[in-house]
Length: 152
Image (cartoon, rainbow, N blue to C red; front, side, top):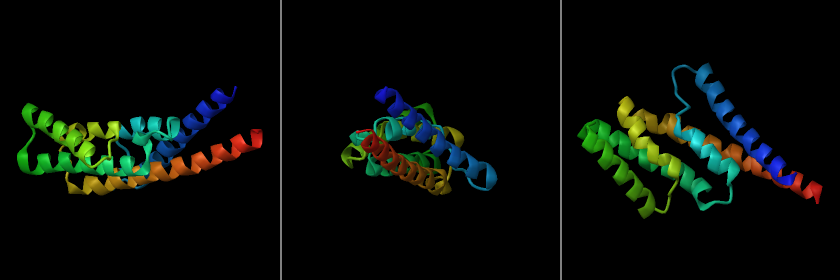
């Protein structure tokens, strides 16, 4: 029963995080706050919050570093099958070198290059969205700990 409750907390947290981002994305049409890799990020942040891959540094910097690579390639190198492959490899290496590995962020260069994003994409949705997910994740973790301590 406890595992079921913890799974429901994770699902609630993921729903809350994506719901908040989606609400503001729809409310403020001049900014983007959602991107597909955030769905996978919520799996780690809410479902496996103790994983090294779900830590705030990894979530935020992993997304920022890989998004930077994607924008850099888009703006200065171009988008071809070869550069899509190279950008993904560079992004993976950069996360590993900087110890900011966050697997969902590995999709960022592909997303950014295939949709032709510019430098503003680093702020919205990448930075603001990643920070929001982390903050909501920490709040849900506190709520879950409170619930667990009350059950003991």
